[in-house]
Image (cartoon, rainbow over all chains, first blue to last red; front, top):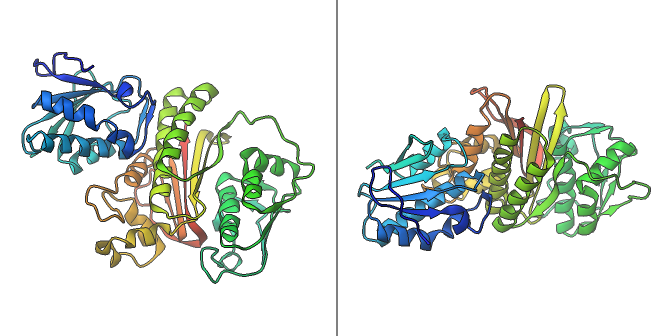
Length: 129
Length: 286
């Protein structure tokens, strides 16, 4: 079940526990693994039109391919919810399994997201347009 | 057709060009029985083991018969067997005389023995089991383990997704204690079309690629992909970026091109001897 904690802006938001939602895999590797989140993401975006949180607690490794497809799936969810990708929408990555390196920044940029660090070492992804 | 392997065999670049210029991917590859003579090997590294698998597997898949003459050096033989190399060759139909080669105890430094991968699902499962094996091995620094799994997974994904290899992709992960320090090494090789032909499927790239070494350089840049999709081509770029850190090294050998990527930003690809497909080999300090 989705949880409803306070967001980084202090608003109610929806958190998807990615470890559970992807079948308890410690390494998220393939684009298909990201695709397995499509229903949860669509549901979360439909409930919250400004922000969602993805909690990676329990996950130890992610590939660029997984992250790239995850952003693609989020964008599809935004379009599906008629929010579109031009609206200011925020994705928060809680407990990221890896540091925010240039490759992940490049992945975000390629998909139209700026990625910065939050105070608790999470990643804040905002659309750059 | 006889190919004699070098006494000290680190990778396919150790061959003289004329020794291995006959490409087993081509339909006009020699009709004769292929004999790979490894009897005089005294030293071998994993990248060379991958050549020892891909070359004969391609000959076999194209209907040629093949014999692999195992090393006379017992230590090298046991090492090759512990990696799982002889089992893969024998299962594919190659003649390998393994009489008298003892089955050593499982090598505690071998994290993932040579494994054939045919799909993204295979890579997914192996990357997860590798992460578990790395944790259980207590080898190297624990915070390196997820990174090793990520790098292995990304290069393996590239192989199964883009290579069109008739022999699949073959990967391994091993821990080594080199004179210069402790390292994890992981490699994946395939017998597919190579990076150049893969990128040439994208018409926008075709006029920028003249040689295998051009293709390798291009493939390590951001958002370069044979699919033509502007959102793809992030995997190999990401691996290359990671390998530009101090002490790290990535070798990509595809066709007759090879590129060594490390912290030196001026690295450039160059011509070398043929690898019939693509090999990616990462060395990660721990």
